[in-house]
Amino acid sequence: MSEVAFIGLGVMGYPMAAHLQNKGGHKVTVYNRSAARAEQWVAEHGGQKAATPMEAARGKDFVFACVGNDDDLRSVTLGEQGAFHGMESGSVFIDNTTASAEVARELAGEAQEHGFGFIDAPVSGGQAGAENGVLTVMCGGTQDVFDKARPVIEAYARMVGLMGPAGAGQLTKMINQICIAGLVQGLAEGIHFGKKAGLDIEKVIDVISKGAAGSWQMENRHKTMNESRYDFGFAVDWMRKDLGICLAEADRNGASLPVTALVDQFYKDVQAMGGGRWDTSSLLARLARRT
Image 1 (cartoon, rainbow, N blue to C red):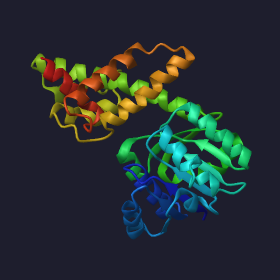
Image 2 (image 1 turned 180 degrees about the vertical axis):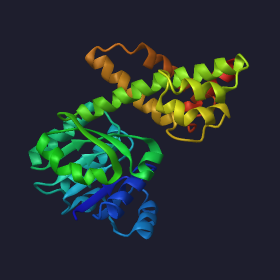
Image 3 (image 1 turned 135 degrees about the horizontal axis):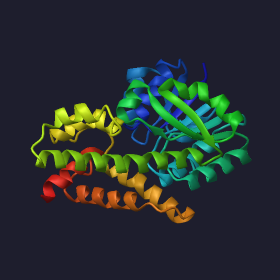
Image 4 (image 1 turned 180 degrees about the horizontal axis):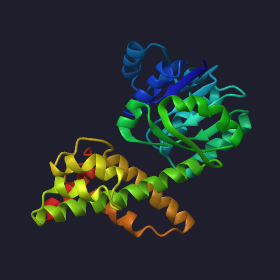
């Protein structure tokens, strides 16, 4: 059993911290910007809550974070009451935030200077994956620190892989989001086309999902898309944040992402429709509205 801190109890962090406490058997201290959320977590799962990230991190073997963006991450790590000020030599900071590769490298350097490890470890699998403890975790860091952290991360994961040095986890998550954006748009167009053609979408998907067109998105989202229900999974607002990170990185490394840039604008249209909190499959709603 390890002494663990978890910073950020949003829709992902809340169940991830619970798996560390209940499934992993670790002693977990939580911090959340809204103290009431931390109090609720402790009431449900035990453990302790801390008043600041620094207090949460003090004396811990592993410190996890799952917050909103680069600025949030810098605040909870390097801020006046940030976790890095409470961590000790030999401990490990594991960042589950989807953020830039740039901030991952920055924080890895800061951690090295202070004698503790850093892993950028963004996740895929959505809220359901977090709740069921079956997330895919893409890590960046050194092999020795990864080997130390992996058994702890596995409390909430189905797959944990080291992709390369610091920042490689975030770069891999960008690829994940790039692929999803194109897949969802294709699925939305396929369902939209099928409806216009007067076909039974359930019958169509039952057949084509068994062939080369099959995907996780098709298997898990086609039914609710066909019923115009978009209250499941990853929100449009979050996807636009992630695609913004992808496009900014592409500007730096020279990659061409024409489809990703186009789908990002389609999600902007969905936001203008009032669908910022709809899940990403709501690209179909945009097509339906335009015809």
